[in-house]
Length: 74
Image (cartoon, rainbow, N blue to C red):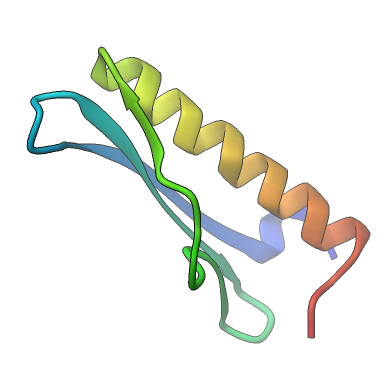
């Protein structure tokens, strides 16, 4: 598998306290499997800025892709 075999959607939203949390969706395109979020997935944040929240989501997405390439889940 290659990084191109994944769809990564990273963004942010504002929580009730007015801080920013990262939002992330990672899909393995070869079989359509949703890798993130999963049951019990950690909250990405909160962060004081939208840039930090989105950067955290992008980083987590990259980590999820690298991990699945190295050790694919069924």
